[in-house]
Length: 300
Image: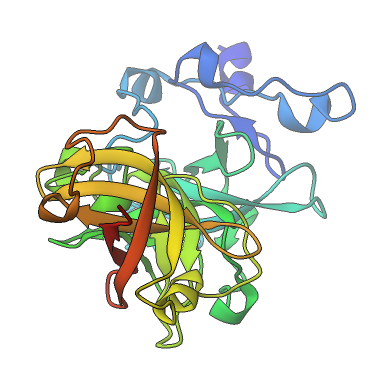
């Protein structure tokens, strides 16, 4: 009995791998920080029986009544599942690491997933806080990679929270290497996704892509192509085919790429179903500023 009571005392001031999850999801501590990162949270009979939630599950897992900011169970917590937070790693005074809150435990503790290595950890209320700073759009650049949380789905696509002062939109044509319809087919609210900054137009919006795009010195590569003449030709690489046409990538000046669409009626003598990676010659018809997609025609 004394031994059992001793095991149930959770050490504070450090992160512990969350109990009740598969061993494969627990982090492997380095030799220099094993004492700060490898303490596992002891499992009580009630917590070990609670089902675990796999990474990317669409439904938040809240175990029993949430805790308030002081860790008292039964009151409404200022933290909610899928919040972007920071957690303290190591003893008091240790560094704060970005994470996503996954669950509020009945004991008043929190289960989080670290952005750095996607491992689950459990921490007390004194070792978690809201992310201290919202990123300004002016601080972002095209091609930056973020681990975000899907906050809303619409006919346009998925709105993703990357910790900036506004959510970014991933349009359905940029959610995968195929056209996703509807968005719920691929993602759900609360799901964590990898995104890249696609464009930062002058209207203050944030365009994102779930397909990796390269870095660019331009804040809005789409705007560069808007000034192209009808006689200008560009090389394009096929991304995928769809009933509406062929989606391609055009390399932007200085790096990165812009998505374009060749309607099937304008493919001309070209193959109606070109394979991904196939190179085409295209001309600009117009730049659709709202969607960030170039409307194209075949150059021959």
